[in-house]
Amino acid sequence: MRPRMWHAHVMTSVVGCTALVLGVTGTGVAQAQVRDLGRQVLGAGDGWGSAEGGTTGGSAADAEHVYTVTTWAEFKAALRDGGDAPKIIKVKGMIDAVSEGCEAFVTDGYDLQQYLKDYDPAVYGNDQVARGPQEDARVASMANQDSAIKADIPSNTTIVGVGKNSGILGGSLQIKGVSNVIMRNLTIEAPLDCFPKWDPTDDDNTGNWNSEYDAVVVFGTDHVWLDHNTFTDGRYPDSERPVYFGKVFQQHDGLTDIVRGSDYVTVSWNRFQDHDKNMLIGNSDGTAALDSGKLKVTLHHNRFDGILQRSPRVRFGQVDVYNNHYVVTEEQKDDYYLFGVGLSSQLHASDNAITLPSGASVGKALKRWNDSPLTAENNYVNGRLTDLIAVHNAEIPSEFLRSGAGWMPTLRTKVDSPRAVPGVVANRAGAGKVC
Image (tube, rainbow, N blue to C red):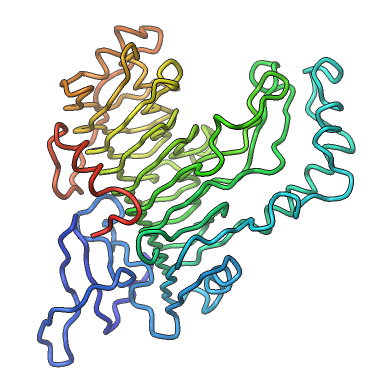
């Protein structure tokens, strides 16, 4: 088990909106302290992230490892400084990772219009993947963007937004192969892939555009707390992306994927807005050796508004999803799903509120990818108690789902009535609303 860094600094444990002072004076007498968001740690019992030693991030940082940054270059430099020593990075204002635009990454030879001519299915067909000079130039251009917009988050780090309007535009935050990370009070605009790949063989040989870059990826990492953030496509909604070869020119990937043996993660009080593929927990059926017994994740008191799918889609993990509010838009009602049931998943979804437009299928809230049982209890749809599994099985019998995830969550703080969840989450979830 990794060591915990409990120094003499005051650290505040946050449970809901109740702050508990953990620091004491040199004489051992507890004193009230002014709360510092960077010093706060995940409270006891607050989801899977509180298990096995808890999540403290960089709360024990000394003065030399507390940074305030206003540019992408400053942010990446602060991440590198001091290695895995506890650090607190305060993001002030909206930092743009792609301030010069996609043109800054283009290599000689890449031209989108020529790319479209070369791989037009009417000319190139759909029986082989894209190859040739334009694909080579696309890959080289993509490599330029990759190195520019990815930021590696080290162990024992807390990243917090300053005030109500701070965050990161177009960056991809890589929480990869590390431990003990906290991100709070940030507005994260999903990175825009400047160079999506056309795969003629995808989607049953009708072709599809595939993009890179999650806004946040938790990869092979334990103990993470994502709290009071806003994740969104922001200035570049999918509805404004062009269509080529009859398919949307997809320039977004996931908002918050949790994959490859990651474990002990709490995702609380966030807003996920206006996005297609939201959250994978486990990204492949072929990773059982890495993922079995891990991917323990809690999602609570988040608002999912205009999210088309994967909130979350689960493989392998014991995932607790409670007290979230899901709002499906009119435009999405024919093609949405909320909870994806994947290979060996152990999803426990209860006490959630779902708001659907008129005519939307309630059964589509669940999507079966593999035959794994789940628990779905005390969920309300448009204010009415609804047995999601029973409705799904009645409406979509070809995807019959079994009830009973086989475990009972114990790491929960206050569980609100699902009837109250829409109001509670609307008032308190997202960046700028941390208490």
